[in-house]
Image (tube, rainbow, N blue to C red; front, side, top):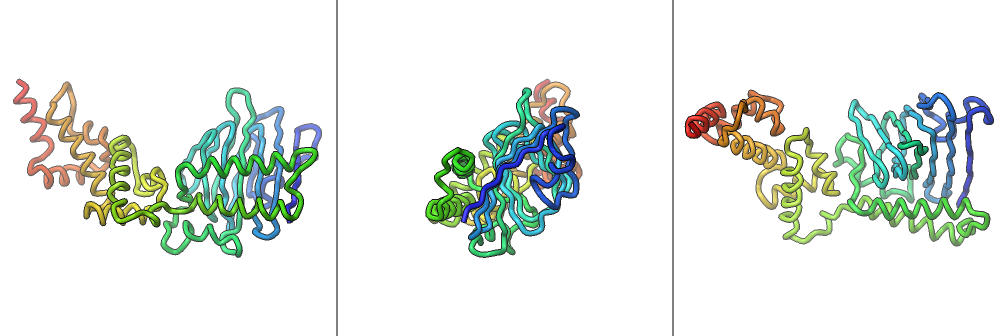
Length: 321
């Protein structure tokens, strides 16, 4: 069975405090970000069989703090900026993006841009109750303790469009999806889409695919090597799990992703030191190339190139002169 409700809170015309319960009944804190024209509207569809809930949220801008103990939440911003802070880590998405979380304590901040109100679609589902067990793989015993869910590139847009269609139909004067047959069909379609969102392409790749994963990962590393980077960040960019990324490197190159990233950064450092341009320093070059621990950097550089980085720079300047 499919249930649908639509609620709106507008400052001056709605009961004070009612807005706090529109999104999450157990929110530890809810604050609007604007001082005037504060408003929040929530459309909600829920399926009895799977306990999936779909939400369409429009807000003048707010921040909410909550602890979600038993659900996964997928957030699709369609207008404005979405910020989520978990364990002092800030994640940001805008129109067309996706942020997904398993059970966790987090702070969410949303705001419109250029005078528009923020708008987003959301999907919430239990992670440990049948039949919706498809959230188990990214939250299983082999997954990282990080509740951020790894999703496939390209699959989010289709799921977001499906949620938009469902909520738009239910808000119409003559909804088609309230019949039991239509509700069952669209519920099955939702589950298929979420399965595709979490389906790890690495599990279906042939024996020669690890090399392709490694090439794609190396392209990403070369593009972003100066930035702080974790293995989880690289895996998420490729739409696979950290475990499959590490497995692909072991099978294809015999090294780890971190070792390859270090090699790319070292290669760039050596290239810049050998150029010996301007007033560059070893410390400045190392930090510009993504190294934050300078003592460890110097040891790694020396073991790789059989000389200290300062020696490389002095020789390059001597040759230029």
